[in-house]
Length: 190
Image 1 (spheres, rainbow, N blue to C red):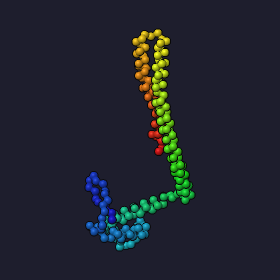
Image 2 (cartoon, rainbow, N blue to C red):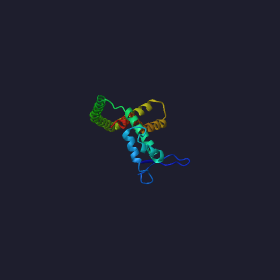
Image 3 (tube, rainbow, N blue to C red):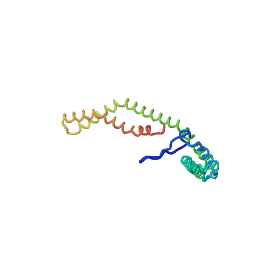
Image 4 (cartoon, rainbow, N blue to C red):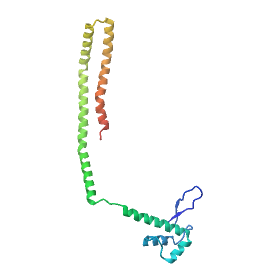
């Protein structure tokens, strides 16, 4: 049974549970049953109506029961259940989408594995070709410096600085090339 406590200054009305034995009225159940069975807002029975005039607790219970019953009826009338065809159509669309996702999952994995193999192959070829690229770069720099009218000290300085930074340039280029692949793998669905 629900009973409202009287609020003191500054407090809200809080519902509390009551069994009817702790100072509650023994006719509360009868009031609730009468209102719910008759679905009426007014109580027609003379004895129960006379009791409600004298009992504050039963009056509160009757008012709450009326409000809850009215709210229940209003909500029941406003609920719109979708048609069976619409429910079937939505479930069919959902089933198709789930089937497409299940079918594309292995393809996504195979694309990822193929991309990883391609990256590994490029890195392996780069590892095999690195000595040739390093020697070719040193040869090109040496020929360019021999052709230019620079001093031997300047030529040595440029050669050593370029020779040391070629590896760093290749690492930066590899990062720039691999960044989109890493983003794709990180942001893909699965």
